Picture 1 (cartoon, helix red, strand yellow):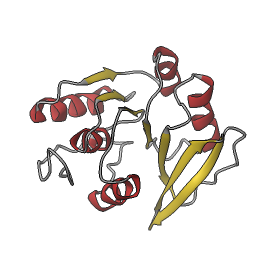
Picture 2: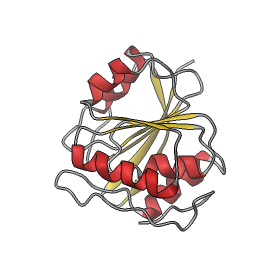
Picture 3: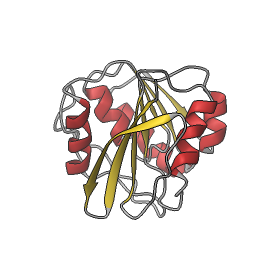
Picture 4: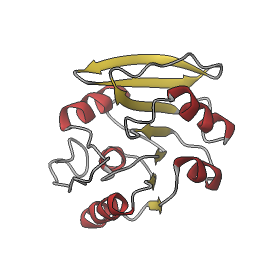
Length: 178
């Protein structure tokens, strides 16, 4: 797997290859970041980080600080190894259940990446947990990767800005309703 663009373009990062994890393919990651624009500014939360590929791509494109969380300790070791191999120092790692992580965080983020295991089908519940834990602000962009068969129930707090399908996966983009 490689970093697509930015400061670390073409650098290789390790995949997790662990049961229950799946990597965001290069082409999907590239499409996500093309949708977000040429540069990323501000703080990033990667709540189900796996290898850290989404957060690393964001940092490569200009994000200022990364917060990465994964409940799987082995996945988090891979993410740390990838961050260290690139010399990235601006990050914090959390090895918590996603709800516990949200309670632990005391700030808002400019970008939130969500790529939970496909067994997490409660899209509305996950994004509303962001709202109730004060993780988002009016400018936060939430990027949620899921199985194409996962249904999304409309949220009181968020508007669905964009939906893109990539075979068996789809990516939804949310912002707070203003």
